[in-house]
Length: 212
Image (cartoon, rainbow, N blue to C red; front, side, top):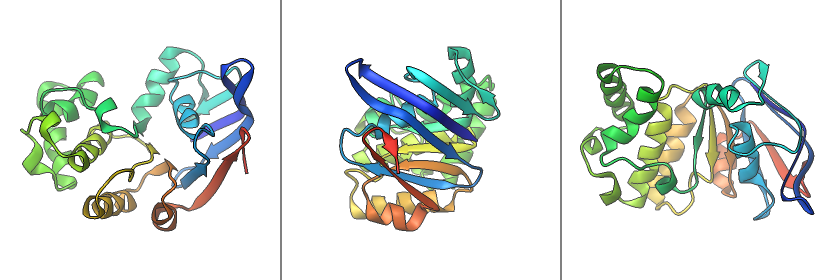
């Protein structure tokens, strides 16, 4: 589904973050990516959806090499990125508007988007939040709504950046149960041992700019 081939990336030329990194995500895989803080794990996710671009190497996603912004717009419709901080993902006044944002940008009508909102929130057991003001939700509720906003776009793969970070035990368990039930390929950046135990079909570690 997604391949990074000999990818090199640096925010500053003298300090490369990734050096000829190779990675692949196959259909149905759940790959957990870990490594030290600052190793470049989030950068790997951002490269996959074109939020940053490699200095060298190739990114192949869903059957095509991706280079331009137009290429990555297509990728973002198929690979949903859940940011580590829900406040980076949610920016509309209400939950319904946040969850509808992606489908509307995919060209769905307002009626179609409303139906997707209802269906997605119901599937996650979040119906009671639909008309709530997003910024008044708890941190755990915002994390779950962020996931709903990603799933509303009907992605083929999920890219999850520390999804259980700073969650209370009940919300953490609820989120893990939801993720475990989804029939989607995933790349999960996480230090959480239970995430690895419950979700991973494969684990990789980022060390000195490469995976091992």
